[in-house]
Length: 497
Image (cartoon, rainbow, N blue to C red):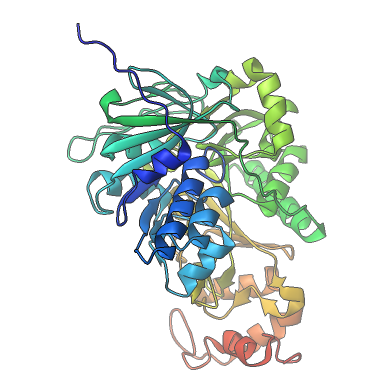
């Protein structure tokens, strides 16, 4: 019998020395949860040293979604990234993307793994993956996220494991690793409820590919979310009220439907309001990120089960989960993002999706990625996966921003990520705009009267009143007048300009 190979132990610097200029690396991480940490920082130090010596050094960076400062931040600051996909939220990296020094491919999160497997995103030279356990037989136990790690492990030529001993090996059983076959051999993904387990507890790879293990003890980086305020609380209450009314009307079954919610303060406010609403029953979460509000509602008995790809919680909440890990293991699943965001599964389960917009136009088109049409904020993430395929798709945003200088309701979005054909309901702190079954001119009036801030309604009405014809009427020379006014005067409001 062939002897089982002993996997070498490396320092972070030894691991980084193996990475060469021009190579592409698939890193673990979906938000900072489960992100590789010590090896990216060592690669950043190598990049700085190479640059000081006058030698080029940049790598392609693929992840699950955003990561922490030790990955995106360190590599961006070291000018070590040639291209980045699929989603980011780091300020330094964002600036480099918007100035053109880093190429960024913004793609739907459900589409990352298939595009890696079929080669569209190029050759994956290395997978650098955080784990809390690895065996000589190539069984890898991930930590607080799954993301696209299974696919990077499968497709990479070589693997480096960050063995993070902060995370307990008792995480075994939290993950459900399943990778579908590619067309034309794909079969249905057998997820019929949020709690269905269909895969394995670990990722299994050829151990010969594992070049080394870098041992460390690093907590997940957690930037936190802005606290809820009166506006976000009102948005949450409006969403909860709308969902409860759908339940009363029979458009949501009495047994209810799983919920997907984005990440951030509005998402926390929405989930909190749903948990407090007396007419909303206990529900399941089928989403990307499991955050603090989910754990709180789970313990209050309002969320019965949570399925995601990332456990993105505060250090205090994570410590609480680890202290009572046997209670939480049967109540949540971390899946690959190809499954958590899969259109087939989303449509089958009939999700109620709630995501956040940067701006929304009069006909229901949504911009969720680019400021003033040009500069990217973070990326489309999974919002398109859920919006296009949910049974009820809701977009939320405050009705104005920057102290009233920006109206988030505009005549025409400056960049479109989600078309009017996918966006069913728009909700701000002002009210609810139900766009279903409405013609474009009807949608426009609903959005103005129900969702726009009162300070901007007259200007929006005036714009609509000037239009005399067209199915989806626009005045092309004035469609971006709000944006142009802001660029020229610092405010979209004609009275404040």
